[in-house]
Length: 620
Image 1 (cartoon, rainbow, N blue to C red):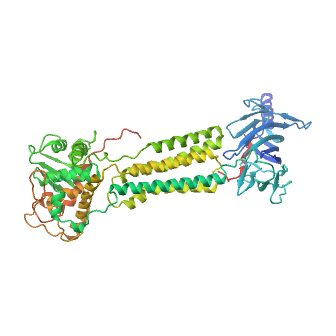
Image 2 (image 1 turned 30 degrees about the horizontal axis):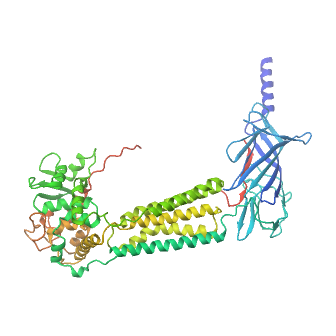
Image 3 (image 1 turned 90 degrees about the vertical axis):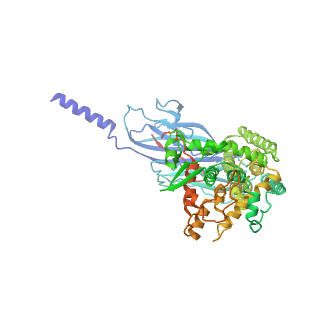
C-alpha cells in the first residue's frame, strides 16, 4: 500500500503544480498608453501592459506594425516588481533566462516570464512597460499634417479589459479639431484596435525634421510637364521620320491590280521568296509554299488521306539548292514516299525545324533582291543610354536616404521594366508592318499608356513620398523606356525597300479581295503564293462558299523554271494537284502541320489599413 500511496501523492503534487495543459489563457487587465508628439514629429510611446497568464506560457510578445518608411527605436522593456512596484529592466539575450528579451524578426519582440521547468501560471498578473519611439509616422496631405496611428495591437488572442490613452502634443502642433483621449474604455476584444486620426497644423519654423514630406508639388508638376513635352516631341519625331520613309504611304489600290500586274511584279519571284520579302521572315508558310510549288512543277505528288499529307517524290534530280535539302530531310530514309505521321515519328526525339533548311538561302536571295533590310537609317541609341544611366544613378542615390527611398526607387524601376518589356517585344513586330499600322500601333502603345497613366498619377497626386532624386530618376527612366520602344519600332529600311515590299503587300490584298468573289481572277498555279501569304484559310472559306464539283481533268498548271502560274486560267480552289477541287484547304492545313516541324522534347521535369501602429501582442 505504501508504494501505491506514494505514487498517488506524487501524481497529485504534479497536477496541483502544473495544472492541466489545455487550460491556457491570456488577457490584459489593463493597457495604459502614454504618447507624446515632439516638435520634430517623433512619437514617444509608453505602453504599460498588465498581462494575466494562465497555463504553460513562456512569456509575452509584441508585434510592431510599421508602415514603409517609418523608423522604430526600442528604448526600454521593463517588468514591474509585484512587491515593491519597482521597474526591473529586461536585458537582451537568447531567452534562456527569465527577464530576457529577443527580437524574433524585424517586427516581433519576445520576452521570457517563466522557465520551462517552472510551475504553470494560474491567473498570474505581470505588468510590463515598453518605451519606444516612432519617426516619420505623420502624413502630409493637402498642406496639413495628419497623425493616423493605432495605439492598440489588434492581432492578439486575449481581451483588454480596460484601455486608457494619454496623448500629448508639443505646442508647435495644433489640432485642427477637438480630441479627447479615452480613459478606462473597455473591454476591447481581440481584432480591434484604437485608431487616432488627427489633423494638425505646424506652427514651428521651417519644416519638422522627422516628417516625410516627399518632393514639393511644384517640383513634381514641373517634372510632369517636362516629361509630357519630351514625350510629345519624341512621338512627333517618330511620326515624321516614318512618314518620310514611306511607312504610311497607301498601297497600290486593289482596283489597279490585274493578272498582268501580278505576272509582271509577283510571279517573276518564287512564292517562298515573295513570302520572305513580304514579312521579312522564313517560317512554316514559306516551307508550305516550297512544297506546293514543287507539286505544281511536277517534282512532287501529293494526296491528303484522313488528315495526313502523303508526298511522293517524282523528280529528285531536278531539285537544286535548298529544295534538295528540304526534300532530303522529309524523305529521310532515301525512299520516294513520306507523310506527316512518318516525319513526326522520325524526329520525335530530336526535333525538326523544316524552315532551317531553307532560311539561309532565302535570306540571301532577299538580300540580293531587296538589299539588306537593316541597311537603312538606324536610330541612335546613345540618348536612351544616357537617360537610362542618369536615371539609374539618381535612383541609386536613394540608397543614402533610407529604406523608403530605396524601396520606392526599386519598385518604380521594376514597374517600368515590367511594362517596357512587352512594348519592346511588340515594337520589333510592328517595325515590319506595312499595312493597317494604326490599330497595331495602338496595341503596341497600351503598356506605354499604362506606364504614362501611372507616372501621371504618382507625379500629380503626391502619393509617393519619395524625394526629388527618386522622382527625377524615375522620370528619366520613363523617358528612356518610351524612347527605346519607339526606336525599336522605327524602320531600318530605305524608302525604295519599303516601296518594294509594299508591292507584295498590295498583291496579298488583291489575292484576299479576289477570294471574296464567286469568280475570282486567280489561277490554280498561284496557289503556292497564296500559301506564302498565309491565305490558306481564305481559300477554304472560298471553297465552302462558292466551289462546285471539280471539272473532269482539272489539274494545277505546271511551269518551267522559277516562274509559275503563267498557264491555266481557271480557279478551282487548288485543282487536282492538291487532291481535287476544294481539297486544297485541307492540303494547306496538313501541309502547314508538316511545315511547322516537330518540337524537340522538353528537358525539364516535372494585411491592414493605411494607418501606422497596431500590430500584435500576446504570449508564446
